[in-house]
Length: 342
Image (cartoon, rainbow, N blue to C red; front, side, top):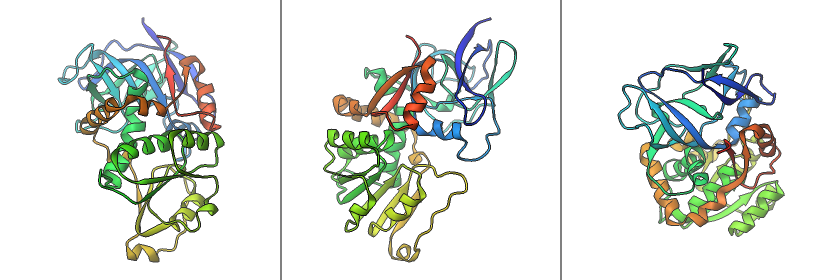
C-alpha cells in the first residue's frame, strides 16, 4: 500500500492536518494522477478555511488549486496529456467535462474529499479539464502561480475590462497582495494605463514602491479628487468597495475580484449606472486556460525578471499552517509557494 502526505481541512477555522492518504490503484477515464512539484497558496484557501461563503458541506477535504506538476498516470480517455508531461493545474476548467467526484482514503480508511483539483499533497488525482500541458523552461516558482494568480489576473484585464496595448487612462488596484501585484505586473506589460494602488498593509505599500508604482495610498480619503476609468477590488471589503465606487469616472468600471463574506451587501447610489458606470463581478477573469496559459507563458518568457517580482516566500508542506498564517496576517511579500521536499 503506497501512501502520500496531504494537508487536509478537517474542521472550519482550524489549522490543516497533515495526513497520510492511500495512493489509489485506479483512476477514472478522464482523470490524471500527478506528482506536485510546487504549489501556490492564495486567499481563496484562507476563505475556504474560514468558511466565508457559508457552511462547508464537504469536510474533511483537500485544498489548493494552482501548481506545476508531473504526470504519473492518465485515464483511458485522456489523449492530450501523457505520462511524464509537465502540466499546470488550474481551478478554471477547460472545455472538457468534469470527472466524477474525487476522494481518497486515510490509512484508517476514513474518506477524504477533494474537488476536481486539490493539490496541497505530494500526489493528486485531478480532473483532466483542470490541467494544461506546457513546454517551458521557466522556473517552477513562476509556473506554479500561473494556474490562479496569473490566469485570473490576465482574464480580469483581457476579458473583464478588455484592456489592450492601446488602453490608457487611470486604474486603481484595491489591495496589493498576490493578485493585486500580478494585475499590476501584467497591466504594465499589456497597456498604457496609469496605475495607483490602495493598501493598508505597509509591506504591500513598500512592494508597490519597489515595483515602481508612482501613486500608492494607505487611505481612501486621500483619493477624494481622483477619478478612475478602472478600479479592481481584490479585498472583498464592502466598505472599501462602496467608497471606491464613488471614485469612478463617468463611464468607469469597477471589477470585483475579491470575494465578500457570505451575507455581506454593498450600498451604492445607482444613478451613475444609468450614465455609463459599471459594477462587474469577476469569475476567474472568464479565463480560458488552454488559450490563456500559452499567452501568459510567452509574456513571462519575454521578461522573466520582471515577473519574478510576483513571487514571495516558500514553505514546505509540513509548514503549510505557518504559510497560511503568514498570508492571513499580510506578512507575505508576494505569492506564497508550497514545496514538497524535492
